[in-house]
Length: 374
Ligand SMILES: Nc1ccn([C@@H]2O[C@H](COP(=O)(O)OP(=O)(O)OP(=O)(O)O)[C@@H](O)[C@H]2O)c(=O)n1
Ligand SMILES: C[C@](O)(CO)[C@H](O)COP(=O)(O)O
Image (cartoon, rainbow, N blue to C red):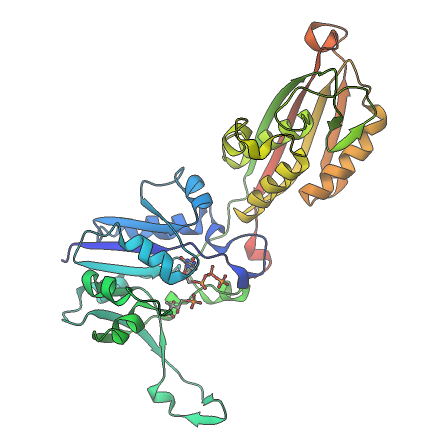
C-alpha cells in the first residue's frame, strides 16, 4: 500500500447551494458534513495524514472536532489545493471535494490500489444523453464526467499547479503540463453536492439529530456618567450610558454569549476581543448580526431566546416590545420566540445601588433539517 496523504477541499462558499447554511456544515446526526466525510475516510486507515482545506474562520470552529491538519483555503478550488499541498510529505496524494460526500470504501480502494504509472488516476462516468456543443451534436462516447477523488503523484501535481492557468480538476492541470492520466470507472454515489436537489442523489447521508442545544450568557456593565444607552439594540432615554469598549449593550452581549454557548463557538471575547480597535464604540447589533450569520451558516436554527434584564434603573417595561422586535429581526425569527423579562434586585447589591445593569440570556438551537427542503 502506498504511503498516502488525503486532501479534502472544503473552502468553498456554497454560493450555488442557495441557503444560509454552507453545505459542508449540513448535519449528519450531530456531525457536520465535512467531519462526517473526514472521519469516515480516516477510519479506512489508508492515509498517513488528512489535510482539510477551509476558510480561516471555519478552521477555528473545525478545530473543535477532529485532529486533522487544517490548511487555509484560497479564492479558488485550485488555490485551496495549492495551499494544502504545502503540507503534503508523501509521494502520492489523493484529492477529493468534501462535497463528494458519499465515497464508498471499495471505490476508494480501487483508485488507490490501481497499478499504474500515470501521474494521475481519475474516476469518470460516461455520458448517456445526447450532447450538443454550441449547435453541434458531438460524439458522446468521447465525453467523460470527471469525479474526485483523484490520485496524483505529488511532484507532478505540484509542478502542474505551478502556473497562472486555472483548472477545475487535478488531472486537467497535469495533462496541460505534459503529464499522464489514467481513467478509472467512477461511482454515482460520489456525486457532488452543488445544488439543494443533489441531496436526493446521494445515498449515505442520515438525518440531522433532533436534539435541542441550549446555551446561557451573562453580562454586566457599569454605568458611565456620559454617553448614550442602548439595551437590546434599542436607544434608551437616559442622560448616561455604560462603560464599555463597544456601545455597552449588555443585553446583546449576554445574548451573543448564549448563542455562542449553544452552538459551541466559545464566547464573545474570543470572537470580538475588547482590545481590538475595530470594535471600539461599535453598535452591538452589528456584532449580533455577525454571530447570527455564523449560527445559520454552520447549520443551526434558532428555536427561542429568553432574556432577563436586572436593572434598578432604567425602567425597562416600556422598551420590552421594541427590544423583542429589534432582536427578532436580527435573529430571523418570530417575535414570540424572543422573550424579554425585567427585574430589579430590590435595591440589593451593585444593581440595586444603580451602579450598572446585569443580564442573563438563554438560547435554544436546533440543527437545520435539510431533509425537509431537499
Ligand atoms: N475556493 C474554493 C472553492 C471550492 N473549494 C472546494 O472545492 C469543492 C468543489 O467546489 P464546489 O462544489 O463548487 O463548492 P463551492 O465552491 O462551495 O460551491 P459554489 O461554487 O456553489 O460556491 C468543494 O468541496 C469546495 O469546498 C475549495 O476548497 N476552495
Ligand atoms: C473536481 C471536480 O469535482 C471534477 O468534476 C469539479 O470540477 C469541481 O467542482 P466545481 O464545481 O468546478 O468547483
